[in-house]
Image (cartoon, rainbow, N blue to C red; front, side, top):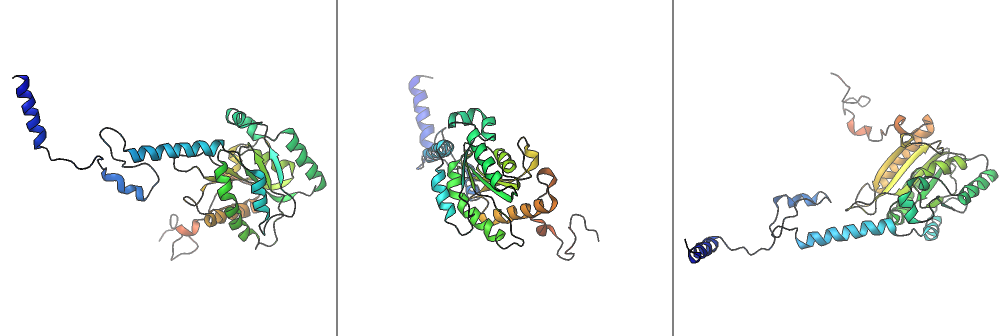
Length: 293
């Protein structure tokens, strides 16, 4: 068969295929995007990802990078928080980890877990003037997303203190501690130096490609420097598109109340705040997983 014949056959084959008016081939799973931020069923343009999805990915990646590297405006956040009705009477304490800058923070996680000498001295001086200590200290830590702290700290604390404020006896609250270049474990150092019974660390979580603004919460009873994660309870993904503030505050208060009563936290303290969802309606005091007829 000659070249001309082969070309004619190819032209005939192509002309018999129905013409396509769409540059993008849709994926049948794209409807799942209504239920998740995960990148599912993106479809294709030729052998590539459609342009709109590529651009969305690049935007999400840029937002994650910004969340990690943008400096937290601690003074501005303090002004915002201290204007709330629940704010402690004492001025906030501005603290810093041993990581002098962001590059050191990212390369040396151990430096982010301990206070620098100046911050340690500041807390020791405060504790000397208030030796009786506190029931609770709240540490607001930039972590890996200053965006999460700036957007979620105030509404979450508003929800939490709306519950705490109605408790009797009331909780004694230490001055707010705002920490730069900090990791989760720095809360234990703060708790020990302020002679507090419990520390609640609010920290910006590591950004994902759909969640650059996720706030994490870590609770430790009797925190001491050197504690591992086994001593902590965690509530994650606090943000408008994740766990809402009211639900997060409800869970946090449950853990605080249980920790205060049992004087423990971490793996020994179970979050049973949702147990009412698995109670047999006909036997209100029994769990349906263990109840027998």
